[in-house]
Image 1 (cartoon, rainbow over the protein chains, first blue to last red):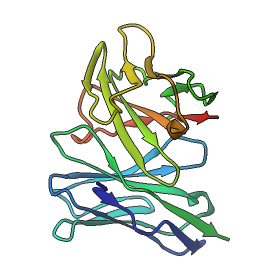
Image 2: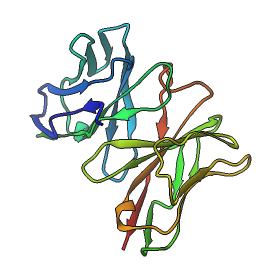
Image 3: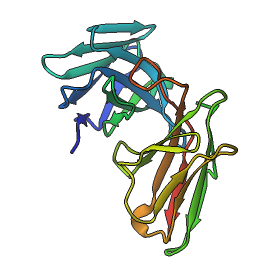
Length: 112
Length: 117
């Protein structure tokens, strides 16, 4: 059962514009959410996280929004840069747990 | 994530052979997690270990797969009698002595790409 879903397998955006990646989850026990970035042939790298007590967390060009009632979160990257071209994974866990549940990933391509 | 070391990076095995994947966690990290990524899918949890203890192996297939994290040395994920369906990227992650989900992010290695021919 896929508890974390990223319904858009790919996203193409022009350099300088905003990238918006979406993620939905079904498990109401999840209270901690993370985004990982992955380049080909490398491991996932932690990007940004948010706890369920917040609805927004910002770190430089990256902002994550959490809508608990809709069980939805999104990652905004602005402005998008060529180096942002990668696969982005949404992940979630419950505070009492240690396992991360991952979405299938969204491949972002930033066009010059 | 450069601190978590996995080897080999690529491993080719014939059906029926054994595969051994190694993971050295970041310095100071005593928690190790193994994840598997099948093509076109996200990472799936396999097993969680602390030194000399398997804490949770609920994501690991019951047969042919085993994992260990000895007192000395790296964590090993062992797959016996490999089949084509075992072909995947296997990622190891480590975290310090607090659980992921409590504000501590797991750090991932670069993965081992296993190909069964």
